Image (cartoon, rainbow, N blue to C red; front, side, top):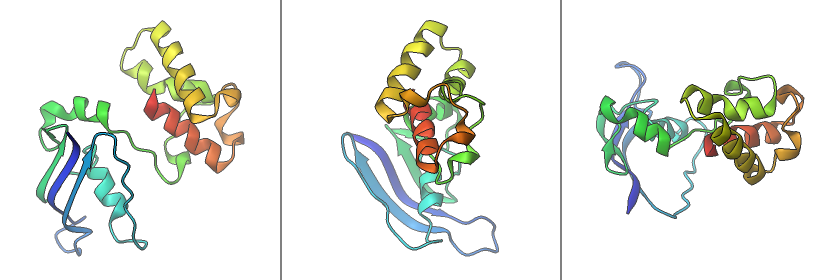
Length: 155
């Protein structure tokens, strides 16, 4: 089963700018691990931002479990399937304590408190940051901050 499918995806940041992504095609099946490699500025992050509809293609289609990212009716469901961890985690850490940051999205989604507790504990264990749960994120290393972001996406 295809989890993510990009068909002929093209995108540029303005009509005057060159294509950041030009005709990209990729399929990611359930259980696969995929790496997108290339030089700085070749469009890797731009392509990734299409997978959860942060960006929408100027041409082509992106499907997540068969849902078109251009269809606003599926936006919530798509973002439940595809999370983003940015290269610089400081740009996505919002709380003053690690476990609060991991819980942030769940609280905004209205997940019951008991389920939040279970999800964040499990996610922090999986990401290897459970022992840092009561620390301030700004006191963590860059790699530990990325693990906080990963735990938030997992939760």
